[in-house]
Image (cartoon, rainbow, N blue to C red; front, side, top):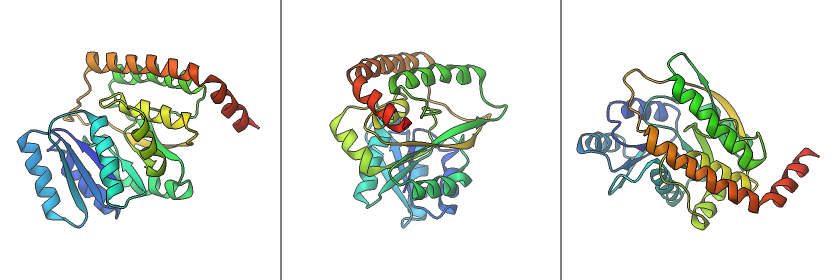
Length: 244
């Protein structure tokens, strides 16, 4: 099942849903407390194809991570074994969904994580800022296994994700994407990286708050660093084991 976290993306989400359905997989729209104009569009999309498009609405805006956590549990309730996450804002190419699903079939226990291939539309500030997070992720995992921890195009095996989110608190806003990957890595879940084109639409809407989200992500990296230190012997053993 494909899960799309949505917050006030009424102008872009319809095309994304069409792209998902063209791939032959059902779509779960997780409305993260959107304004009424967006909520209405989501209701219409779900009503138009109720056998393949499902709608879960959160009562208030809680963040991308909160939407995905709710989406995982709803997808599991509907019998899904995997969830493909894709953003609603049109950055990702929905025609790549079959490639991600094929890779998940070949490696059903792994997270299939998008490795962005950017075009000229990427804002340089966002591009350079991502590398700081990448470096922290490499430190906190003692590994280069995760090429890009911020890409919102990935496939999760629910058998690994559900025990994690039941046992540990995960960031509920923009800190979700890197944190969930690091914590899955700590649990021995393999990450398979798959290159995929990413573009920034000229009229696209980003909810990344440069100040608040960067502070939130920095705090998350600090927490993970101390968590890494506690797990250091096991992480080193994992690294040595995989190197043999």
